[in-house]
Length: 68
Image (cartoon, rainbow, N blue to C red; front, top):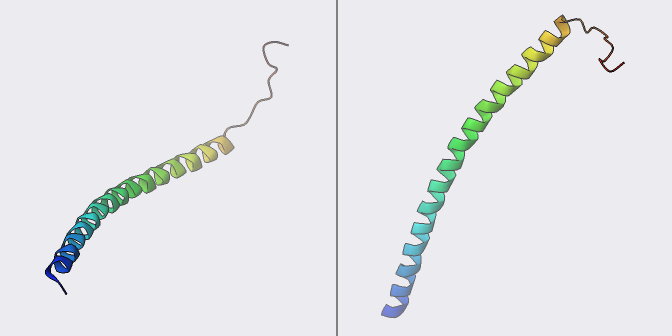
């Protein structure tokens, strides 16, 4: 291999290492965001279940709307 070829490969390797590091940062941020979204979904799911149970306990009264 010529020296220029080795230098080219070293430059490409440096760019690839930089790209991998940048992608790693993005993946780490997305993982944190995913964890927060999963927690939010759990909270919302529990809230929906509690509202559904509360609705079952309340008797629905059939009233005429005020415009009748």
